Length: 444
Ligand code: ADP
Ligand code: MG
Image 1 (tube, protein in one colour):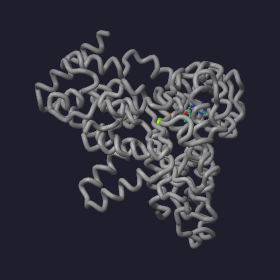
Image 2 (cartoon, rainbow, N blue to C red):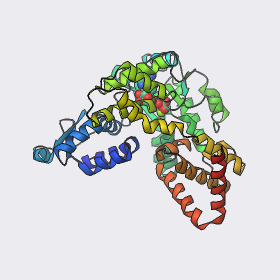
Image 3 (tube, protein in one colour):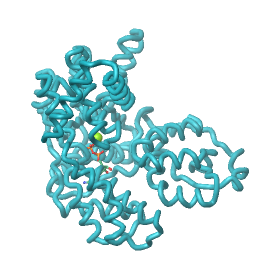
Image 4 (cartoon, rainbow, N blue to C red):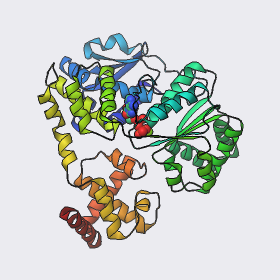
């Protein structure tokens, strides 16, 4: 990967985390220069841009870098004047010699950075136990809980721990989606590719599959999962699975897998109470080197109750807002201002669920199918209409909407939105549907 490629991948991440305006500013003012001494060097077009980018985006840029290339240590911002010092020093990026090619764990997702409270003490203890004695105690470990409650964080914490304590172990983390895609590719490809796929997944010491609720219904995927599970399990290798719901509620899961997932330990993560949320915010604020009083943290914690990722986003928003308007002290005024949009969003009468309910009622289809993977016209059309309505009524990022619809790509969401928008002008039938549904929603 060269520095441009790295930056492009980071921008893909940043596009989902930065406000649109901020993202545009970043793209306009900043270019990647090189990677020097383990640092990504970014050049901004003036001193003013440099301090702006540093203040507002540095944290998010670092996070994006960690996601894309965790072996890098830091980001450094320079201006044109310093560029010559760096430009010829480009280092060739060699992947670090992990014992296993695919294993890249996010550095900051550790056990130390995971705040434990009543809502998650059991699951955290189970995760720790597994990382101390993989394959021995709880096998498989099945973790489930709502979006943004720390499942992925815990999986990476186990991975980070094992990288240190058992460097020879093959510890493999994969999203269910990636597992499925790799499998499909391998099946299409040669027998060699199929063998390589099997070898990869059945030869590891620890296999973590994240977000198993997205498991595809196809026989091939279920079959492969089943055999992978059996091979690893009988060799006493650790299997760790995460999901947003318990095994019995995962729709497409074959019974033989469902029962196997319950052989070991099932642990759930619940939304944290206020005290834990504040403790998490304290940790995140100190990670960002920001000094935020407990009163302020409490306000933030009270604004988001069930999704830690959103709560973290809100904290970042408050911190960047304060630095933007050069408030050295983060007081209630800053918070109020920074939260304005957010609370407005919250107060919006119509929610994603309202829209989904209206669409399923209107077309007499069930929700599972609407947000699922089925491709027949009876479902696809209502699904696209539903996506269109969500973009009309709410200010959700496309990526988030994609998550609602079974982890679809943001380009798919955009396509659906544009298609229906177009059809509203040209196709009387569709425009009637949309109008009816809008009426239904606005009457609520
Ligand atoms: P999930 O995979 O369950 O959707 P993530 O693991 O991605 O959620 O967590 C979302 C964000 O919330 C991450 O930044 C994570 O670090 C943070 N988070 C969640 N729970 C905790 C916790 N108990 N302590 C610290 N951070 C947490
Ligand atoms: Mg996750």
